[in-house]
Image 1 (cartoon, rainbow, N blue to C red):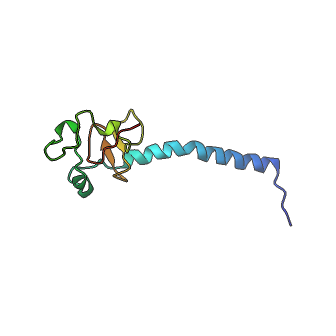
Image 2: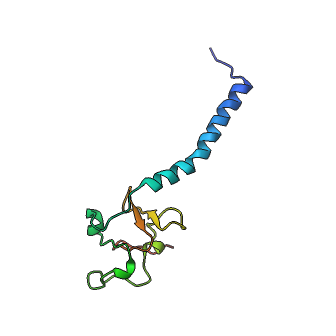
Image 3: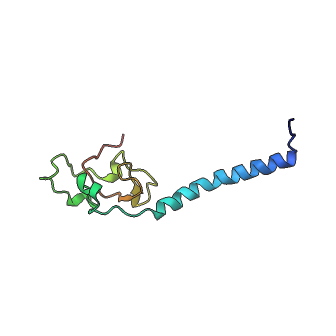
Length: 109
């Protein structure tokens, strides 16, 4: 037996769905704000040669490093371009300094 839905009920459902969709960006921003900053002592950071300030990269240990490279112009960096600390595909759940650098740097196209 099929049940007919009133116009009022349909509009209520539509309003709830629209409200939920509108709240998603704010929830993502809140989740990003709650993420910890990546520390240079983190095991993954050590393995990938991450430094918070690209100007401090040791070129002897990282011969592929070029002074023009930083997380800011890396393909792996995500998030709002205005934020200093942003998510990175390589360090899930943590935020990296956009002025930082690691050995997996890939030029943003």
